[in-house]
Image 1 (cartoon, helix red, strand yellow):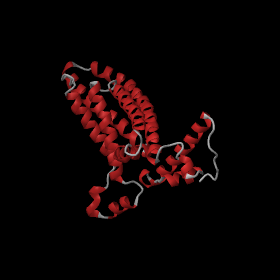
Image 2 (cartoon, helix red, strand yellow; image 1 turned 120 degrees about the vertical axis):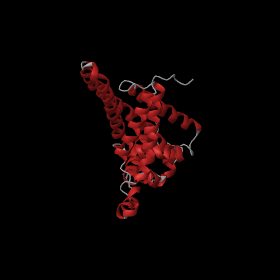
Image 3 (tube, rainbow, N blue to C red; image 1 turned 180 degrees about the vertical axis):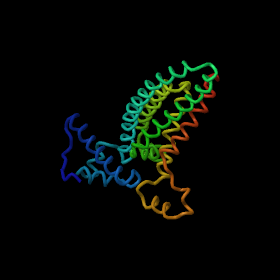
Image 4 (cartoon, rainbow, N blue to C red; image 1 turned 30 degrees about the vertical axis):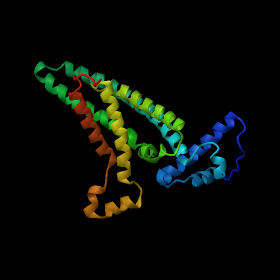
Length: 250
């Protein structure tokens, strides 16, 4: 709790500052305890406001976390696109070495390069997600409950930003894979959905995770998210690449 007793914001700038303070407080609590455990009252206490005063700035608790999810989509999109751009630059050198190989070895070398490119791309996507624990947590909670207790206007604003992120990262994927844009967008949608689901299954830093690890017969329930997610994304990219010459669906 900040210990600050806020008066009602009177200017647009003050209102934005108050909203950012609320979002920062919610993010701190969710990072420490998980989105599921954070109540509106806890956020109000953390920021130093009465709950009724806090709800002048956001419709509901879910509205706060939906805004955090929208912001997280934008931050992740920008960061992973920069990583994919760097990967594309490295791939140019690799392609040059393959094209200079003898014709007898070129096909084999090309297949190896394509498989490695799929693995490298998958690793970038998986690491970019797993290194953002709060984003992974929010990805799971968004369709389950965060979109359920807000106005349709708020849902539309969130969906617009999330879909823009899918489109942006999908376009970047097309620079490092032979995928069509519709396939690349499906990879992004699957990767983010799986990251959210697997993060919940992994239950990191919880008593449940410790319990799984202490019981040999439950060892299969311990999920190591990053390598598992990398394998799924890599398989999806490889499969789509094999179909990349098929016509795009109408």
